[in-house]
Image (cartoon, rainbow over all chains, first blue to last red; front, side, top):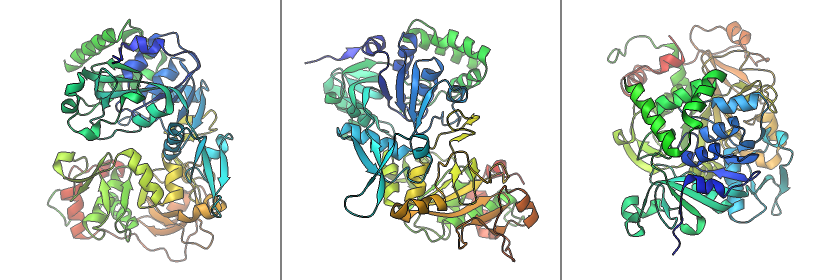
Length: 289
Length: 257
């Protein structure tokens, strides 16, 4: 019986330069931030990041880890525009591929089903097709209709964050939205799940609360990381909401080069996830004063 | 303010009623308003003349009843689960009417929510195209513009995230579900009820002149000989907006009195 438990750094050791990495969650919601931070601490480079984007995209792009971004949007939700995403786009520092949200979902489904593409109406008539000339249309073989042939979003690796998992790689997404996390896993060669806590299999259903939340199954996952507060500063309901004060500090710092260097020194260029969490606790204490 | 339903309607109240009217006749579909005044407007439509409209809290919960702006799920009757994946599937079935806020829109209703300037290296990156392409090609769309200006209502948008009438027509039969019903702004209501499906001035909010709208629009608007005045919400509508849906007056932050 495989025990798939790993540390964030062990997950990152499985990755290599130039890989295509899909990241679960949505905007500033339930992002596998402990795993993203481990990538930031590594020497990895030239990644293609595929994400319904939030600070995961902003951080990896700003740090020069991502060479190419594949997204439908990048947002911090309560702060609509992601400042680091703005920075890299407005300064021409990354290659970008923009899809509609539904096209993105269709691309994940195609990859998960090992199909080269799936047809969709979304994208027709829009400049999504103009700015991405790799996108082709297809005539319906059953009638008079032209549709977009959305290519499979094949991933080398998927990273997701769950509320609770067992050591074998089953996991529960217990919040109000599970997003596309299971599809990210199925679209990837290998998938790694971090979780607020890892419990014995016998206790998983009880911890999950309801069988409908157990949508990440161990045939999808190759590693499990226990990462309490691992989605910080994004939200991870019902465990915790978004750390709005921290997110605001992040967004403010990102808009100014000196402030950003200081933010990086204090929170990102630290030796471990534990050191990050300690710096966050210190920030919260200062903020409470 | 909460009990004084006899005071005059503000410009924001007129906008709320104009938004509500966008959803008139929609029946049992999903109303998806983005932003403050769209949300209040859609809830007002359901509270009055469009009781079958289905509304979510903007995240994953369908609810019944008249919920205050910002109400949490334990404050209303949750009757359905509508996570993003299901939204993206249902919207392709057409049973939805979205109201979005564009950063640019042209005379044909092509709209941009993605980036200003050259998309390859934008002058100003905004959200990305989000669900705009899929929404507009699959079901009814309306727009809300809180600050009507020639920078927003522009001859040519930098990135067509949301498909207008000319682009939809060029897609052939796949464009058959496309409809842009209205554009509500802080000055007026616009629609596309013209032979060539270009934007027309439908009504002026009380106190606004044709010249003011024309001046603030970057393309040539179709202006009928007689332009009606946008309707002022009834006392009962004002009561619902002020006492139930938006007691904190958030709509006045979007459109100041």
